[in-house]
Amino acid sequence: NLVLINSDSCIIYRNLFAFGGLSGIFIKNSDNQIIHNNFVFQNGMLNPVFDGINIGFSNGSNVISNNIIKNNAANGIDLEQSIENNQIQFNTISSNGYLLSEKSGIRLFGENNLIKKNIINANTGSGILVVSNSTNNVITENSIFNNGAFPDSFNNISHAIGIDLITPSENQAIGLSPFYTLNDLNDFDIGAN
Image (cartoon, rainbow, N blue to C red; front, top):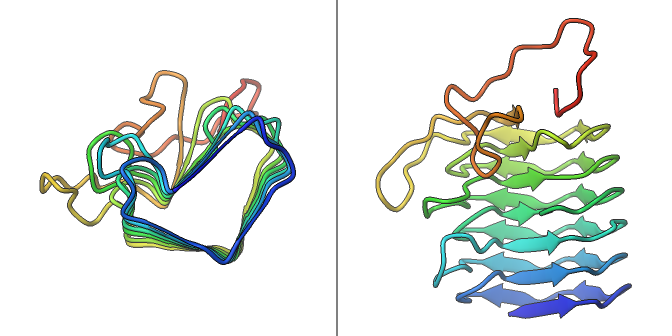
């Protein structure tokens, strides 16, 4: 599988990343990546925290588009500690999170990100998990269904929801049951809600 560290402005196009022990695509401290038209399937077989695609500690401006991201041990896509301006669009993200530690289709960090026109379904956790310090994101025109309704490899069903807005006191990896956050009155605080 692919590991990029301190490598900016790469194009990852028309590849199969499958059956890896770690993340299918792991990118750290790298910006301006284009990840397009790849099949990322059943990765993280050696450790339950490895995702289909993990972009960690990036300043941003990454584009993840037209990929099929399926059956990975942890999140389908994880923008772990990434800062801003990432675009995730036109992907199919399904059946991820079959091990215990991270279960979402997308785990969203940072601000000013765009999640648009994706199909996000059958992940064992939330379709999209928005961590507590992630703000000013646009999540629009996605088809998000049947997330949190299927058992993980230990036969646990999370009952998570389509989009989970995490508060600072909740588990930033998987959320906290009952997986909903009441709307803030006048919204004077910080956080995903």
